[in-house]
Length: 132
Ligand SMILES: [Cu+2]
Image 1 (cartoon, protein in one colour):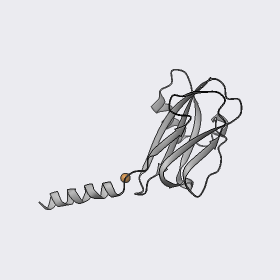
Image 2: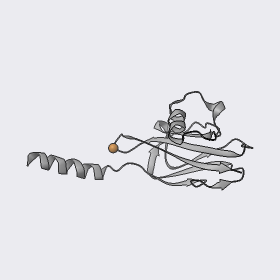
Image 3: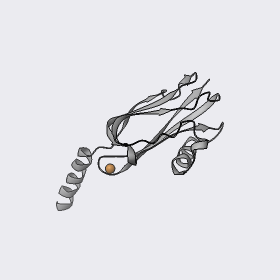
Image 4: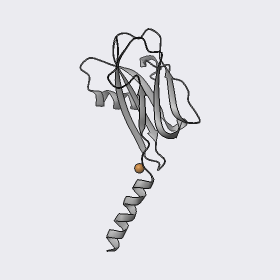
């Protein structure tokens, strides 16, 4: 019984501290676009940008999306490899705009993010768009 009560308490806590979610990505997932100038991510609550990571990287043909996303998040000093301009972000915001380099080559691009939820847990995700 005590175990059951503890379990119920843990479950309700989990609901109270739901993880931050991305509610919109522009360009949308799998969209085909012409020379986008920015990528925009919208979250369901303000996030601390200082502890967040956002990157836009080329997705080579045939590359594994999950592996490419994990590698991009782990890499440091990779500004030269990125499609975004690697802006320095700080403060709290529920909407993040990443400027992109001009004249991106046609192909697939991967948006990757990792943010810290209200409960301190990291949440990561990715989305792909295509430049025509
Ligand atoms: Cu959590």
